[in-house]
Image 1 (cartoon, one colour):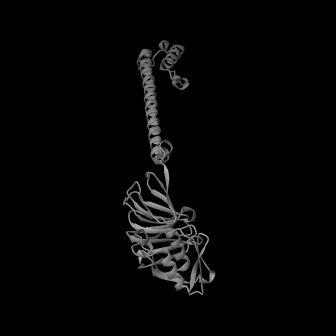
Image 2: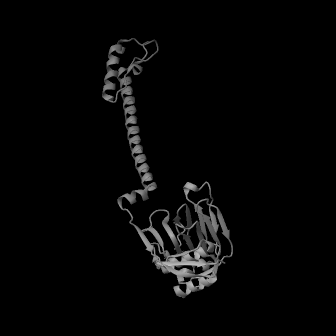
Length: 321
């Protein structure tokens, strides 16, 4: 009896009508209707078998079409989900391209003190000789600004959007607190004093391997060497000494003469130089609401010398302390 191997010989085709035509042609070639049945077997019904084969072919084709449609829908969904994920991940960068946020600069010249409120409600006071670079509005997961000089911050609390101040290789990060940051370009140190809340001081990513984050709480002070990133942390400091300038105070306690003269230059916009032999002198005084001329008289007595006009400023000479 002949075996029906035509399905194996059939070439794949995307058209079910062509497949049915191939099956019909194969049946005709075999001439199965002319075959005599084996004893006890039913006569071969070619039309019945052919109908079953065509039905099977149609089911296969329909299954392929359904799978193709499902694959197309799945691929489309994957593309949509992928694009949505990419758009979400880079949403801030995309927004910065289509709707950039303006970057502004706030400056306080020597002899000035500027107060300002940022878009998030953070209040700040900028000391003389300082500059602040900040966005017109904050966008993204962080609130970032750059400070050159000295400023006091009263940061609006936002637990999901930390406030970060960049000062060279050092960054100060908070969620909401008040503190003072001193980072003048000519200073060897960045100094942070905390009044309320908690403040984290850490290195920027380029130097993260050298320095870990340091957490500060009220009445703590941290000085970071700009060159070596060495730390000096102090407890129970008088934060009013470092932040009182925003209220018009001018108080020094065992402050190096060089630092005192720098503070006076920024407050009164007057250049003051001193002889090298006075470098070891330290000053303790309250110059709040005291005129510049009177301040110079007091300092001259403390260093056992005198201050004489020189150009647009003064030169301090004396025997030393």
